[in-house]
Image: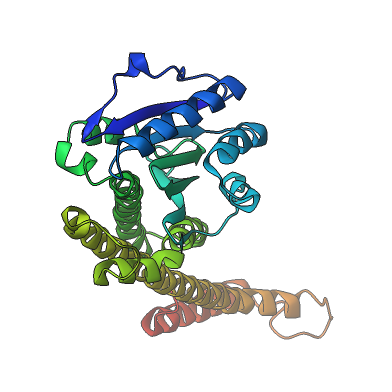
Length: 340
């Protein structure tokens, strides 16, 4: 589905009504011919002019049409459509291929929703392909279209804008997971007896989604901070360096979360072991106390004729006193030792 299209020349955007590609429709052969015409117009307008086509949840045939127009390799098409593709940034001459995981936090269920966006940047064109729900770019497109200085920087301004949305999503998810981890830590060390292992495992799985998205981009972040990844226009230099810093921060947060969750899981297991040990001690103490009347009753239940005290008038009271005295003595001993 076509999510957006624009022709940007000399820092201005061509009015939507003039671009004869309808948003919200399937990218067909007619759209491919229009895209070729717009791309030619952008190349003729100058190096800072470009056409940006945004697609979302497209079929293979749709993306292939756009790739044929822009001269993209079939393998790149496969990467853009594969939701299991590892995040990466590749530079080949004047072309940049970037695949990012997009993350969103679902407040109701504390789940991390994962999507993907592939961005192809070349001479006078940008093609973005988004798969999944997270990562709406409409607000970013509107902000970019209102910034004359950034638009003049060319296609790399779009790449920065998309990466900015993606990285902001990483930071937001990392902060939300941090709140969840603080809550689970309070539960683990609360006086109430709780089984938090399942919740901790779930949080570790959600944090794993963050790590899978961020860790492959750590070298990219370092290169962005040092300005060694791609030739970046001077006006975009500070923006890309800031993105690199945010990526590294997201990577650090994901590592910290994993360490905290591991420690919380160990603490939960240790606490469960202590609780089980306390339960076993209590059970053992009560079994020992109950063994006194059980043993005496078993002896006198054997029904031998010559057993002592069977015909003694005070035999029953004496036995009961012995039973309760022994039970009380054991109870006090276990209570003092902390078993009860």
